[in-house]
Amino acid sequence: MTTMRALRLLADREVALVDAEPPPPPAPDEVQLRVRSVGLNHIDVWGFRGMAFAKRLYPLTVGAEAACEVVAAGADVTTLKPGDRVVPYSALTCGVCKACRRGRDNLCEDVRGVRGFHIDGFAQELTNHPARLAVPVPAGVDWHDAACVAVAYGTVEHMLFDNAALEPGETILVHAGGSGIGSIAIRIARSIGCTVITTVGSADKAAKAVALGADHVINYREDRFEGVVRKLTAKKGVDVVFEHTGADTWPGSLLCLKRGGRLVTCGATSGPIGSINLMQLFQQQYRIIGSFGAPLSALARGLERIASGVRPVIDTVYPLTAFRAGVDRLEHRDVFGKLLIDL
Image (tube, rainbow, N blue to C red):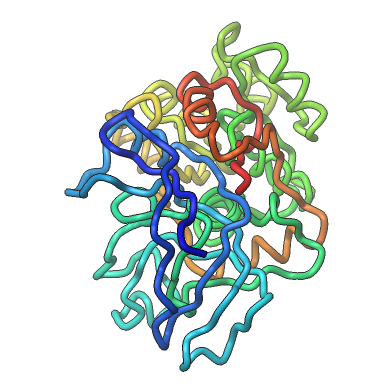
């Protein structure tokens, strides 16, 4: 291959499909990957807008989440071989700091950047990647489902179990049930026997959330969700709030928690500033947990969960040329489930 296709951000909000030079043979500790499918996420929206929170150089290949096939392995790689299917971990962690050694990769003390956000991402036909940061895909998991794992499914797995310690039989409020991570959270929580309450912004999304398995669906444009949740739980509140929308829902989310309840949050799409009544916090003994990304172990668990039948929700699969259309839909919340790009 003398050239390959790559989708590159040339400046803020300016993206183009270009012919690029393929990568060199992989280094001794790397694998060369053929990218099969790329998942779109809000991190792509932020990157597209220029909100990278760190210096970066243009042009920048987009795409932080992917499913890939190994086409070559470096001389020192013994765990992977050509033909293996993998999900590459998006953050280039150091692998040697205390957090990495303890399997808490998303707390790495020396990250070299997140692919597709700070450094070149996966929306290209071939790429090299550290072998230790590639998670094998189990049999029975297809390319599209695997392409949802590195950012979305792994994030939900980490939020629900590593952080919120969700247990069967508990009641959970999932905000934005039509989003990529919201739809995954509904499906996972239902699969372990939880009662799921979710919020959505339209009647169409409400019907889809019910079909997905949500026990109760609240259209937040028509009702105050906190009032409905209090009625549904006989004023006791929920065990867990799955929060990722930020300022607009923050006060109501706290009111929805039962005494000793847990709120786990990974996002702030409606704004990053929220207030809290400290007396409410300690008197009700709330546990508020911030969650960012996921460790490699959560990706592996997520892939096994998908293999068992708890699949992500796929909204639309686009060709490589339609990245802008997908980002526009994410910006306008015109989506139910995940958007993917096929290579």
